[in-house]
Amino acid sequence: MKRKIQSAGRFSPAFLLKRCDLHPSLRISALVLMVVLLPSLKLNHLLFLGATLVVMLLYFRISRFFVMIRRMRWLFLSIFLIYAYTTPGQYLIGFPLEVAPTSEGLHAGLLQISRIALVIAGVVVLMATSTREVLMVGIYSIIKPLSLIGISPERFTARLYLTLQYIETSEFKSKNEKSAWQQMLKLNFYSHEKALTDEMIRLDFPKIGFFDAICIAGLVLLICVYW
Image 1 (spheres, rainbow, N blue to C red):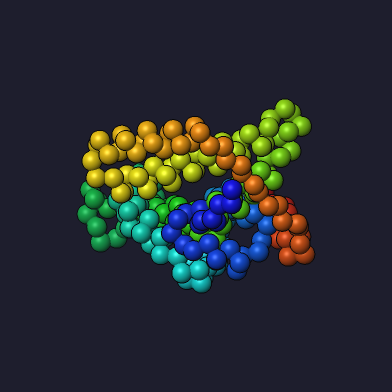
Image 2 (image 1 turned 90 degrees about the horizontal axis):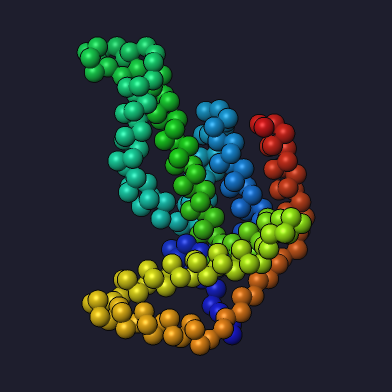
């Protein structure tokens, strides 16, 4: 049974995948490497990374990022205040001593908020430019070496795929069901339907191309420089 390809994040059309031909495992590896290296990046490097992600957000027309940032505004405010008033340093001139934040704290708070925003932007870009099947291909390719120690990458990938599918189905039903008894009836219907039908998960593994090899060399270079 063929399945329609859907966006992994469900907020951007899947045709955007055609604009991003990077191997799925490299997309995920690049995001993980960015998260790992963020604490060691300097301010100018963070600005360059932020500008790159902003260009990608605008190019792929991803508005979900700004929605997520707006929802996290209170978290960002809490982080900013905690760093501003708990980091030792020189108090800002012009504020009463009892309520004066430190300049080092303000700088550290803004830096931490910027790092969190960059991580969110990276995740949003990955989800918007990758279908659910593509993400499964990338995860499977990354964890495939674990088969040498007895861990089955096929079983892990299949369970993760079904988990994402269940979350998507649950969200869809919760938005469209109007009463508790309708929800119960539909839940029973879906459960019986899943019990009677078997689903085959088919993943297409692309080959490593020339551009992928260049990206691998770039990731290795970044690891050697910042690790």
